[in-house]
Length: 419
Image (cartoon, rainbow, N blue to C red; front, side, top):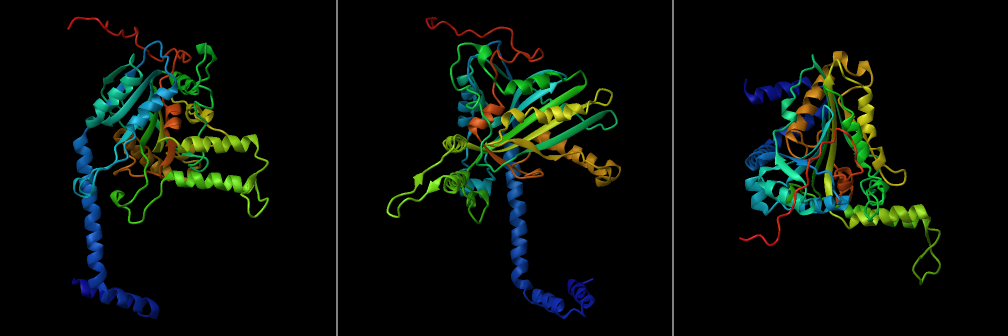
């Protein structure tokens, strides 16, 4: 049936509604104007997605396992240096973006328990493998970095024999408020004894090390360099950098709580600034001075049905409490695969769909780009200091029995060896 005839029949259905009929008639009359725009827009969207997918596929991907020695004397600030080097906000020129499909590189920092064996992984583009290895070795010369098969690809969705639960986290406050970091725990200072250190990552390692045979727990931190976005990010209207919002928030706190105008010809005087307000403002100002990352954190717990323990779900999300603060920010569950009440999901159909998508998104490390772009939420902002707190290589304070370390420390060759 011709398109014109279909359109006329559609209009006739609403012949009694004069206003709607006039609107449809106007749309039809303007068809030569809006239809080309619509078709061009759809074509460009499909083109950009195709080119981005093609560019990402050309980069390839690798999973690097970092094996730690028995002794690591570096504080979390060493991992912050590594992350600063991985902050690559550039996407090249307009030809790179619109013709080649280039995107900002992203990385996955993963803390994983495979039946109680705790491991550190870094997922990256294959083209960036040498850069990642060089940065890790520059700060941690005694570790070993190995390219390994992807542990996640070994897991097949099998609801008859395995149960799986997944979640994505969010910040409890605005992005400008930082998490409680290693600086707040005093790990930026040199201590005489290892036992004096309080490293928040040890709670994460202890929980992961408690997994039994048949159980696995995964923590995936997806990061990419944050930047103000414009035409190179396919935005018509520019999106400001997060630091502008942070400065505005500092100003708001000061003006609301502590500014009292004395004389018109003189600047306002700071009065009554509490220790808590000083701490918050100082933490935000410290964050502004550091590189920032668009971030998403995923958690997955899976186990054979005969050993599945639902209490491990609250344990997996609870290990992030030590990074939270009442005065600053915290981490909480934003979305999860399971529903609270049976009437929300008839016969578990939606839960199965969520589990399959979550597992697939995890395996692909997909969040910033299709096919799971901004899957169930937009990314939040963490600075390199915050990410280094969540993911760093612990020293001797971490004594988890199942946390494997390499048996011997690598020795440097003598400087006077003959060439």
